[in-house]
Image (cartoon, rainbow, N blue to C red; front, side, top):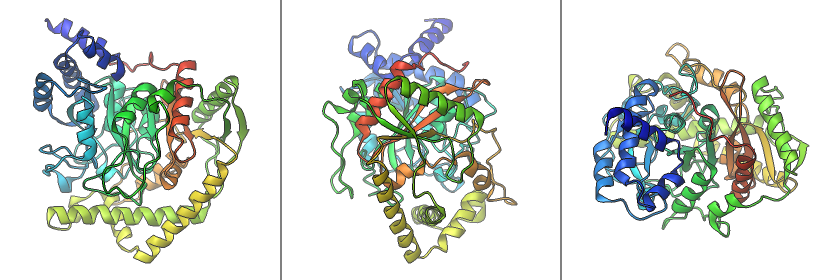
Length: 483
């Protein structure tokens, strides 16, 4: 096979979603080894520009593909793991931090085992900001991930490396996680489907019971709705000892739900941020376009703001996040055997850690109590509506460097990034509800602009049904960045 033919074949396979690639394997039209080599070829060709994959595991992937992956829904399909929270025994695991530059995982997460059992071939780890704390993926340890749609722009964070890899077609889908928008922000920036499942859909063990008081969830960034739904079917369900019960899956599974008509939904929408500021015109246009599409599909549209997003809720979120950062640094200090020095952590992480260490146990529990009360307010809102629709982000992808803190200006991430992520994606994490960013719009400059939908807790199937309907009405699979 010549180099030109190899590249042609790799590019042709990259245009297929994971479901289609798995179907080729089942029909014997392509082998797991061939899918793996196609993915490796594209990673090697595209990664020098994008910096999406920071720890390749090509030798292991080739050996796994040659030996024959388990018989599952995605047998032989290449996959990437985000370098945050999910561990793969024997593979470098840094969480984007210089403090962990040489750390190697000693065990598999339960989700890693389930992904392999689904037949996936893991080809490496993807770029992430330090400890996933920033809405951009520009860690000092690994350097910035670059957006395939515009190499000067952010991929979003914290699953930005995975988003760049999927958007460029290195793999058809990739792992991500989400404690405040980290699946949905990169999906919006990179023109992908980003689904945040309800709390406890996927396991976090054996290392963690929960992460961040139940805020964090695991899933993936995908090109197609059906890939996201079928992958969740393959991985969802509690592990023994998990601290939260898992919501029952819909009859027919999530993949079945994605093929169903959602019925007539009551959709509340707004283009105003909680502080009353309008979104960037491109993001407002994306929302208006989505609202018009939903109305044309027969849904009931009402302009409405989400209640309870007041100053006290913002303060509670700030206290909780400070405590979360204090925990993650303490966790890794125990693992490493020493506390980090100022040169071990990025300026923003250091500042957050110092602030978080001052949070008392009582203040943290008071914050969680307020956020749980807020979750009940949101539940009351969803007694009247089925979906809350907003732009995913308040602006198109920002230039690289705009959200990078310095020693002299450690809070720059918060000052610049706050208005960028002004729409409260974190509501889904506080409440445990499902949410998604859907790639329905591109700006005149050719940048993806996602639209965000939040549903009631446990209503993942309803959101998948809506996502499937939107994908059928306004397909996006034909949209690709220049590779």
